[in-house]
Length: 162
Image (cartoon, rainbow, N blue to C red; front, side, top):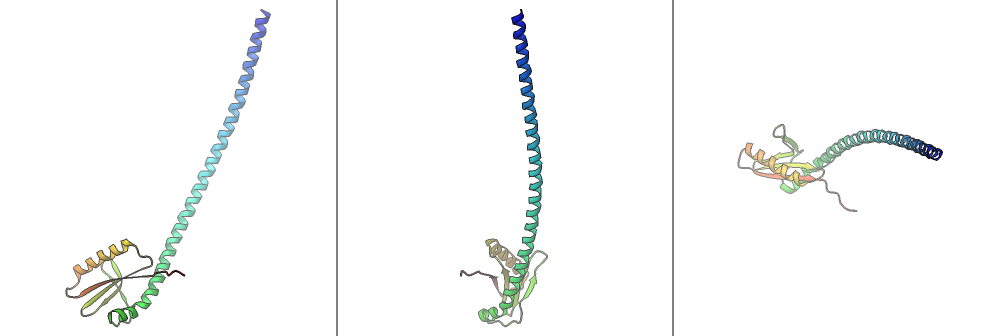
């Protein structure tokens, strides 16, 4: 009986030790879990900060792009009267804008007795710009008196290679 009691005590001691070991492991897991959640919170905060920064940079780049576009347009507009004179033998002091409606306008408009030049100025030329120009020319054609040759023109800045 004494041996059985000793085995029982030994088993209880082993179980107690195992329970203490498990408690320590659970405590370590809770600590690790807590640390992971703290890291997740920090990553979330960093992500939100980064997203705010990216939105700000995107907004600033949009503004910069519009400013550069306006500057390039002004630069091209400066040379257009000479180009129109040279290419079409039409003398104009300046190229004026033409607004068709609230959604469509031309950056340049020149009208003579037999011709109409409809000019778009672009910093970067994309295929959708050509489609938009064709659509606007069609809208102009619907409203304009007939009989004049309509000449659509795209003027854009072309960077050369050094």
